[in-house]
Amino acid sequence: MLQIIKKEIMLEFRQRFALNGLLLYLLGILMMLYVSFMNVDAFTWVVLFWIIIFFTSISAIAKSFTLEPNNRYLYYYSLVKPHQLIVAKMVYNALLLLLLSCVTWVLYTIILGDYVVNKWVFFLTLIFGSVCISSLLTVMSAIASKSGNSSTVMSILSLPILLPVLLLLIKITIYSVENNSVSVPYNDLAFLILLNAITLILAIILFPFLYND
Image (cartoon, rainbow, N blue to C red; front, side):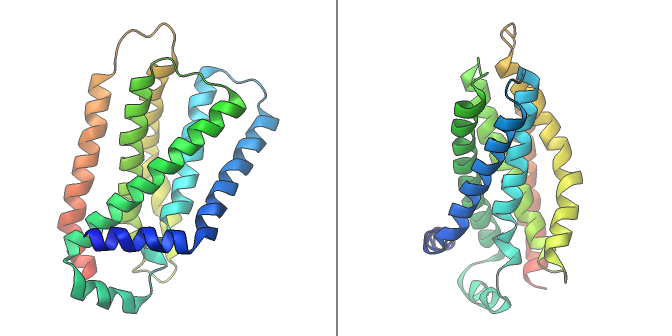
């Protein structure tokens, strides 16, 4: 499993244009937001932040399985078991999206200001939210790779599945930007962690059927 993660990291650094393209994409969106929304309230700040993360995650993770050549699956088949492959992909994509999310937050704060009051709630949401989004997109990328038009299928699957997650993340993040918020959304955070666990379990159970197809 560690070999797969190492391979993904080496490929990412070898093909730096992909990561650089994502960073330029992020910067372009943020500059466009700066021009369009010179002054935003806290709620708008939260919504725009997670919309950026959503589209960035699709651009970053869609290639996880959809751009893999078919003969590479034969290599994977001889190297690791199905559950090890999907977990390795999910771990790598979670680390990648967490890195991009942190970069997004830094640039977002510089350009539009920092509205976060409760830092630890925000960062917990950012960590578990990035893991949840990346895990779901990794599974959808695996499913889409089996279709003829994987990019289209990936886009169609992403919105209805991730929309409830985005709404939950927005709800939790609002707690971290409200000055008068003294309560902590323990139930919502627990539900977010539960979503991560369910996604991991389902991926381990269901991916072998795709892997052996």
